[in-house]
Image (tube, helix red, strand yellow):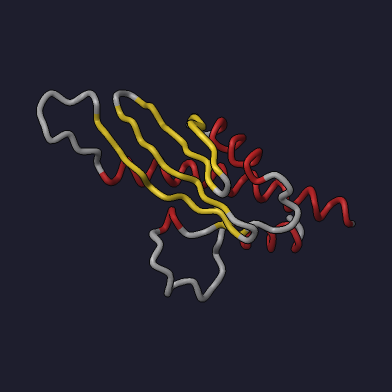
Length: 136
């Protein structure tokens, strides 16, 4: 792995220092969007497809997503601006339970959110590497 690729990977995964003061949880930390990402919605939809989520709607600066998995329905908004994108939880339901209240375990939610975040980071990293290769 070249130094440029390693640097791009670290920046894309958001492992920079000085972000501890933000009020995001691990999977909500914003991922940086650089100028080489021309179409963030296209990138987001590709990551959703790879992570087996569904895009449910779009608005400027937002893509609504749904994970329908084994009786669970998890909804998130993937928000973006010119500089970053991040995941905002909307709801989580367990439709397969027999008695109320039907909770979704936090560990499951975190795992599903982190999986989605990994696919977003992977696609951002690939865009960074492609951009770096085109400039070399």
